[in-house]
Image 1 (cartoon, rainbow, N blue to C red):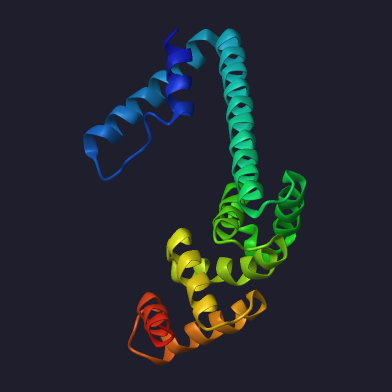
Image 2 (image 1 turned 180 degrees about the vertical axis):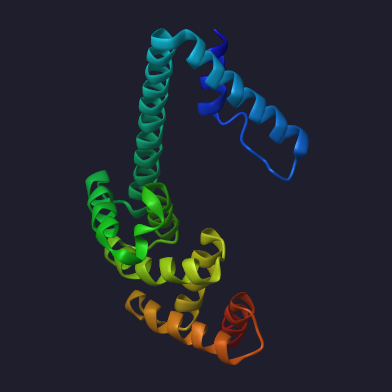
Length: 194
């Protein structure tokens, strides 16, 4: 029973190693030790229980992530007023783009949803996703804020979605040349077009 509880706690993320917090880290280390000793003491049965519980937890978490991914894409499809399949195909195309690959499936779906909420079409989303993903990777700005500000800048400057890369290059170059952060540079450009 202790073995199953330890595995459930581990997979549920209720206890994670936090080296900066000595007491929590010690508890996590003790739980891990109990898990290892339980598997060792139960020998074959312990190994079977350990593998079975981990397999079940992996399957459940995979299904949960797939459902979340689909929910986000359905929300994007509703916002863009297109069929769900269109957004699924868009997510598949963005998956193969090296610029958006690091976002992971949920991150890509969130990016698609954020742009769809800003009344962007699937074609515009596809064009804007790559530069936005690169800006997010380089400048570590939260994606919802980045999408909102870049979209607002493009609309105020009367630029098309295909000019997103040009805007990204201008912002990054300006940040490198000026004594300003990326967010300050973006806010300054927004003020310029007000």
